[in-house]
Length: 451
Image (cartoon, rainbow, N blue to C red; front, top):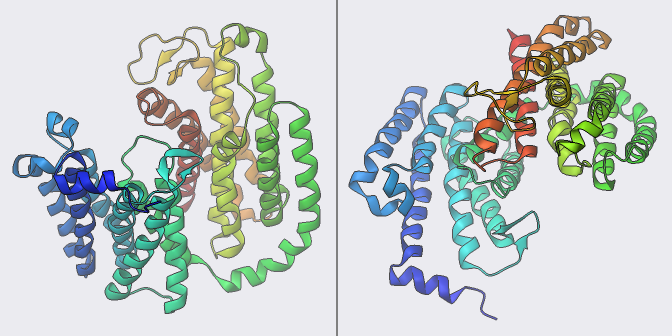
């Protein structure tokens, strides 16, 4: 069996549609060379802004680089998002320009070569996204890692040894490749650049002394964490609100949360599960009759609602910013619970809902539909989860109550906004919207607490 697909290769050489896509990808990859020129804040910002200006005039100069539907609309979201990602990263990391260069390079080489490898090399499809291939994802990781490593070494300014840098960039490539492979019809340029840059920056925050200080407590909590994980997983499955994949995923999250944060972490998870389960049972027959009842939850629901908390929890003991990441964990749970309660209560007692974007009447259960009763229920839930901060051993976290509550409500509203726009348009599904909801809740809570 031939490794390279002759049909794809013939189309590329013949100048058909695949040829246009290949030229587009070569330009995509080629723009990564400018990441080597990252020197100063203003110079990098100017490069990004210049790229934005070029993205607007490109359809007139080189329309062949645009796909047919992009030619019809007169612009390309992907072409615009590429330099926009550089601009945003520059503004976020003005003192860590090597992070900007790393995110830029990952977007150029990883994302660009994923398409080339995926289309040109035969191989199995990814089980979670049949439109993506294994070789495309491996190509992303390989070329993204290599291109980013060379770029960051040239730009300089990173705090790692060469081996440490190679491992950190490999982790960034893996995370970015995973996100790029998700089955969503969205422009992934900002997602790839942002996730890679985020991993690179977070790696600089890892502190061996912080882990040494927390190590004894984590190891001491592990036996009970394992027992709790098993019990909570079995209880969750016994309620028939989750399947086995959801129960196992939730058990894994419980293990992480208790080992790192103790009762505060696993308490947030348990509170969310209890509140969500009770809220979903209220008026269940009425919701089932209207076909708005919550179906049995799977691992996707667990990741969507508790994945952010599970990602932030280890950083409590691995960085000197334990307070910030604790607030992030509670903020994500507040957002997940607020959104769940608002939706479940609103469907039963909210009366006629309204679209959050147009304020026109909507049907019960529609994406982005909100009601006064539902919003009030969500607000009270967010405040209740904010009160969990009083259980923290660190008295400084007690002032985070309202930060967490506001973050939770903000995540709830973001969920409704994305539901009315991106989800209704088919770009995101419910689980992706929920994940963004919890991420926004965590970020907003941390931002308010840091201020």
